[in-house]
Each structure stands twice: as structure tokens, then as C-alpha cells.
Amino acid sequence: MTDFVELARRGDLGELARLSDPLAYRWLQVARDYGHVAADELIDGLLEGPLRDHGDVVGAEHFALGVAYLLGRELPVSYENGEMHLEAARDLGVAGEALAAARAGLSPGAVGVFDRVFGSA
Image (cartoon, rainbow, N blue to C red; front, side):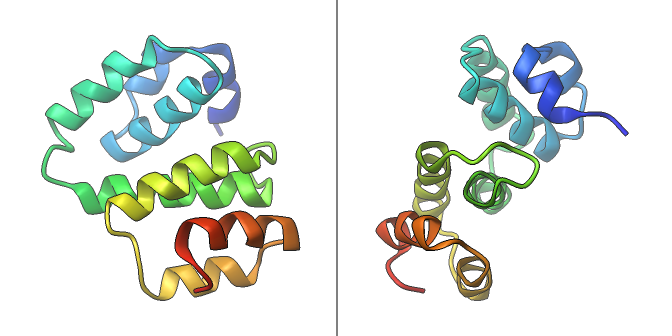
């Protein structure tokens, strides 16, 4: 299995860009989080192209990243990155049952971040 975290950490943007559109968007975001600003152009291309009318998909990717950063699953724990991605998800309209389910599995510190973004779900 491909280690997408390692590809993002290294900034292997070409390899990440070859993934399916939502997956590419997710891991290019992580590459940007690691400081690879060249990912911005590829992200913009996805948002102006195949993901243009799919705010729900983009929001779901940000939500998944936010929760992954808060839990430390797949990605190292980062409350700052988690909050940033959860804010993007919120701004794109992510809501509903997923909020309560995600919040239930968080540590107390991560719940504080989650609640700052969404309120107590």
C-alpha cells in the first residue's frame, strides 16, 4: 500500500496528483500543510476543474483531514491543522450526524478544538 503521508511529507506532488480527484485533493492539502506551497497550483486546478461543483466532496475531505489530525490517525496530531481543516469543512457546509460521531472519539483537548469550530455537536 502506498504511504500517502510520506509522499505528502516529501512533497512528491506528481505522484499525489495522479490519485483519484478527491484523494489527490486530500493528500495535496497535506503536502501543503507540510509546507509544499507548489501544491497550491494543483489544488486550484482540481477546484477549478473536476471538483468545481463538488463542495460536498471537498468539505468531506477537509472534515476527514481535520479529524485525522485531531486523532493522530494517518497523520501526526496537530490541533492547528485539525482546526484549519475543520473550519474549511464547516465553511463548505459539513454538518449532521458525522459531527457527533467524530466528536465522540476525540480526546478532551481535541474536543476543545472541535467545539471552537462547530460548537458542541
